[in-house]
Length: 97
Image: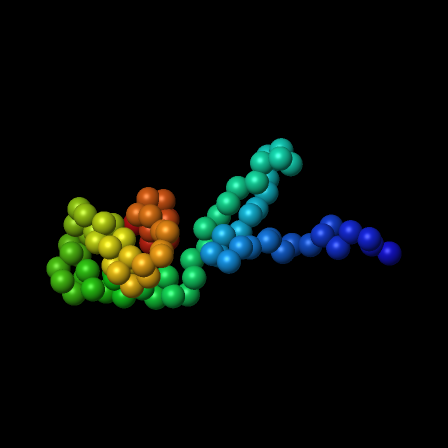
């Protein structure tokens, strides 16, 4: 009989903002990193923002023009005022430019 329900569990605890705490492999047991998980609404707004940038001429042959990250962040803040996503590292890691 196992008296420790957390042993062997693969579930990461999450808070109300979609952040999950994960232990890094090879790291000491005291170090816990926080990884930001996007909500469905945030992803939808990001996709709509990218579509809007493409439609308004921000997309060039080799990618987006300089300043597109600031435009996306502004787009997110207009749609979700309490959004805490930043251009770097959140948006860049999500779209993998």
